[in-house]
Image 1 (tube, rainbow, N blue to C red):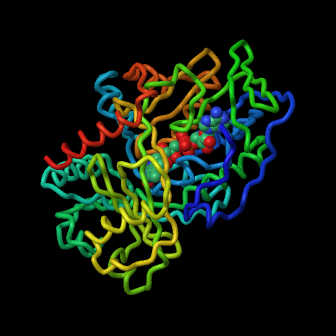
Image 2: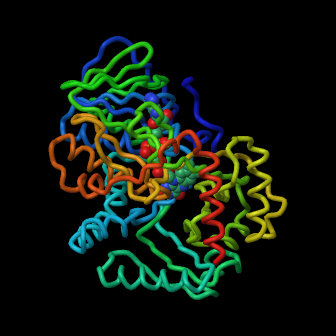
Amino acid sequence: MQAQEHTGSYYAATVNEVTDFAPLRGAQTADVCVVGAGFTGISTALHLAERGYNVHVVEAHRVGWGATGRNGGQMIGGIAGERCIAKHHGRGVEELFSELRWEGHNIIRQRVSKYGIDCDLKPGYVDVAIKPRHVRDMQAEHNALVEAEFPYEVRMLSREETRELTGTDSYIGGLLNMGNGHLHPLNLCLGEAGAAVSLGTTIYEQSPVTEIRRGDKAVVVTEHGTVTADAVVLAGNAYHHIEPKLRGIMFPVNSFIVATEPLPDEVVQAINPRDLAICDPNFVLEYFRLSADKRLLFGARLNYFGDDPEFIMKQHRRKIVKHYPALADVGFDYAWGGTIGVPINRVPLLGRVAPNVFYSQGYSGHGVNVTHLAGQIMADAVAGTFERFDLFADVKPVVVPGGHLFSKPMVALGVLYYKIKDRL
Ligand SMILES: Cc1cc2nc3c(=O)[nH]c(=O)nc-3n(C[C@H](O)[C@H](O)[C@H](O)COP(=O)(O)OP(=O)(O)OC[C@H]3O[C@@H](n4cnc5c(N)ncnc54)[C@H](O)[C@@H]3O)c2cc1C
């Protein structure tokens, strides 16, 4: 694996600071070594550092280089695969889940406030409905939140209200949830990394890990150095390829985003007057919002495995114009893609490959929230508390033997299947 710089995203172009942590060299020791500096790795490191652990984080490229620095920035509640987890554990876990679903949001808000992280965090999100069954699902979600005395505004939207808030006639209704929101994910991750460093964490960039040696103390190996630690947390998610036991349990699904040029005020008022994150409920979904400088950030899946910005812009322009014909000639300044880890049963993959080598990955499209919860759960597990860890780890992943070898055709087939399902 060759160390790389950030992709050409809007986020990388608007970072609060450019990181330049030295690569790992020589023989180092730590209480805990984390592999991967996305939300999972950095969140875990910060939780551990706050508890007094000496943590070293080893990143192949740059802090936030993976899905974390490329995503839609939509802070969405809930955990993918909840039904499967509830089925496995029985009804007792539902109450626990009503807290866990929003725990990541609480952690993000607390950190933004505690460490003064400037990441454009804003409240407000609309689930938009395309079909009557979506409205029924949203009504059920709304009722459950009201019953649970959710402390933020949640409101079903009529077709007209949805049109007013989204500036398009594409949707037949929606669910407004002011407990969700949106943010600049790379600046959040960099802020959290800075907080971890201020508490004594060491971060190495441009340091691809090539091997994890097992033992009472595990050894994380790169070309020029090692970290020997009591515990290791693998946080490479869809970009992780070195641990054989993690192969074939998750599909790498690509999603792509464009950022338009900054939009004039009258366009902003017409398409998103309350500055909300917007997402449709399809499996092969579209998600969009405004950036802090009023660009439309529009994301969708494409059946494409490359990273050519011109290609992404062309495809996404068609999708945007369906909702916003007035944006037919809008300029695009950035286009990029990233890879999401999607477990086959959608249940986030938390577990161990050895007694002291943990992993956490595969949050489907809910990673902004769930990585922050996962970081807390990983820190608990390292400290010897497994109650919440076991909720996930006890649900055995569905394994596709050889899946990693055929991931592209299998993902293409899977997406086709879900596209057909979305149309029904
Ligand atoms: C285009 C896109 C849009 C998305 N939109 C949303 C959204 O709006 N809302 C939402 O909640 N979620 C969204 N997601 C999902 C979310 O971004 C991810 O779930 C989350 O960022 C995962 O974080 P992570 O730290 O687990 O993985 P990553 O951010 O991918 O980080 C893994 C890191 O591990 C490093 N690594 C891997 N292997 C090694 C190695 N051998 N040695 C050293 N380092 C290694 C990688 O370089 C990488 O930096 C989106 C994802 C994508 C790609």
